[in-house]
Image 1: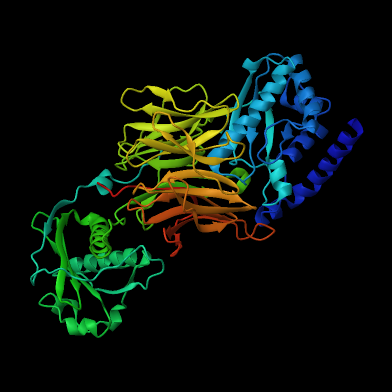
Image 2: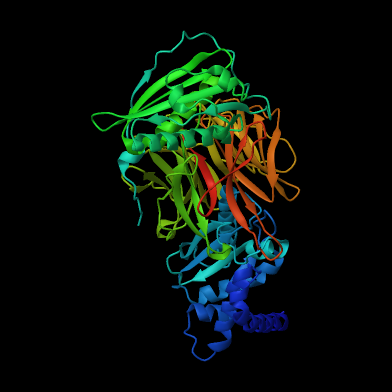
Length: 176
Length: 448
């Protein structure tokens, strides 16, 4: 698992290197570029020596992945998401004063209002899971973005599957 | 935070005095009419002559008014304004007496003439007459007084009068659309509240795009908007007063609130609150500020909309496994499911006439806009696409507007999200022109 994860990170970092050069092109053509994972991987690669304990960078370096994914119109945490959330819980329990916001998202294949409800459900599922791992519920703020803030541009299953997600924002600034 | 840059007078200026013009000939029961329940009827050829004026300014205004009337009637799909170059009788000579033979020969069935005059007090007087070309009878004649800058509204009101006289239905041209203007890439989409006349004119942005806003809906008098804003980072329902530009948080709910709609009397807003994985429907009384929970089922219950008499609410819920349409009493009693077709059903909205519910349906990878009777029978698709969503009714219940997202090619080129209108018959689908991408339209009532 660990090996797989590291190689995935490496791959992402590689993609990041390629993408940063072609970012402008990608933006112009509307190509499917996953922006946030790229940023996360970059932070991870450059900040190994100066990570502040309890910081967002520390969270990313420790847990590796700030999001879990869901099946279409589903909100139960998938089996592959559980080890991710378990890592989040360990880290969160290590830094009990760090506030966290769980952001629930949906793909574009649903109506706006239903997707807002679905995003809240997904955020709540993650919150329930973390609570079951000993994280205090009061620290866990939830918010839904429905289909309003896709992580990936695109209109196919590969894009949709990355957009059906719940993301942990540690030390979150004001949402917008 | 909000930009409201148009003068209040322009929106709400009262149109004074509507006077019926005496018929030049004795009014008789004319046979000229359009049965608008028939899909794709041949549009009625109508000659809409330039409204005349004694001064250049009056003539310019008259011509502009004629253009707006023609465009309204043409867009309805029921009328075919005749090219002015075919006209034989001049507008000036028309003021003396119509020569009906001249209009019959170019196949006009209806004839519209009018005149604009500036009053001593500066107001504009606009009069029009509608003629049945074959019987030679005046079908309608009226005069309106208004401030000159309101000439557009008068034009829409005249178009409504013509539409109404010939179809026997209320018009819908003197109305506005509030919607969400969209720009930027999907992952950083900027959304702004915007308002415009039904024909796309008088377009104004009401918010600056710094905050994500969604799903605006008009109050019954079209003076307030209720909508969802992520103001200060939390999705909540707000009221926006068009007159003052002020926004106000609606209620003190412990969870996220969304999907608001006014009651037909304007005294309540019904909305959804999402909390701890469930979404339920609440009403808020705007006078007492009291809230009442209307659904209590561990599911997603959202997109509520009142019946026109205010006694019932339609909504969608996944309480039965997938999203379906339901109806309940306005107090939450007597819940019953009305949609039973394949796929997911959402965003039900009651027709202003009370007999139909329009909805969004998702099935087999496609979205559909459809209508069904309130008992779920007679389901019919009006349009479909990659994504079509969020129907809203014109106040006469004969036309709907919705938004259509087109994915473009495999690289996303040609992506767009736009507003469209369509007849209840499923014919006459038209793009509604907006400056940028557009979604979540809401049609106002006829402007009071």
